Length: 253
Image 1 (cartoon, rainbow, N blue to C red):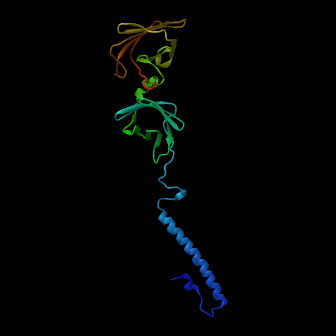
Image 2 (image 1 turned 30 degrees about the horizontal axis):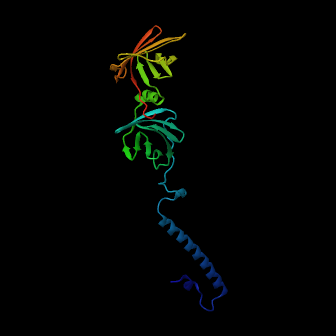
Image 3 (image 1 turned 90 degrees about the vertical axis):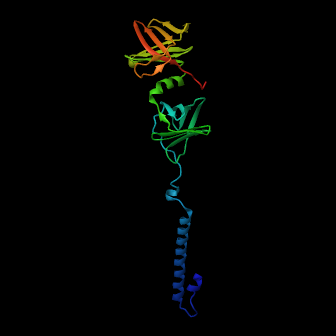
């Protein structure tokens, strides 16, 4: 039934009746507009609070520390990572790349080309060349070794009681850090002398006399129990220190 047909007054109606009719027409027009708005909102679907669907993705803050090297071990894969503002650098098995943070419905997500990394709390996932690697978790005990590898160190050795480590960069320098970080000796690479399975580095300065002997025989770290491929003896001035070491590879170069 047409609304106009209901509201039209019969012949002979008074002027007050005409005014009442017009007020009713305006009221019904407003009600029709309101009713139409309700129908449109109901048909649109989803939560429109704030003008945005609750399922829309967003940028979540990454709670991991910036500028710190991290080592991830996944099911069938491992890699090194470092965080920067809005990006994550990753050292994969065959290449180095920088991922940019992108929107994610949950957790934090980084992406570049066919490489994707997603993390939420203790749960993490890596995708490389459309291959998905799950159960990624941090391996903090490997950080000193992998960070040295990332920095271009060619050989690294460690010892205990007191704790020390040695880093060799061929053609550049030898760095010895002893007494749990309290002692530090850096000398230019004097070159290596090889005799059988033994390699020797010897540098003498006005401050220190440093001699390093590396023998290619299996060695067990007394602290971690890890077996490394080389036995290392360090003669620093009047001190003799024993430890274990290994050569580090750089597949990204």
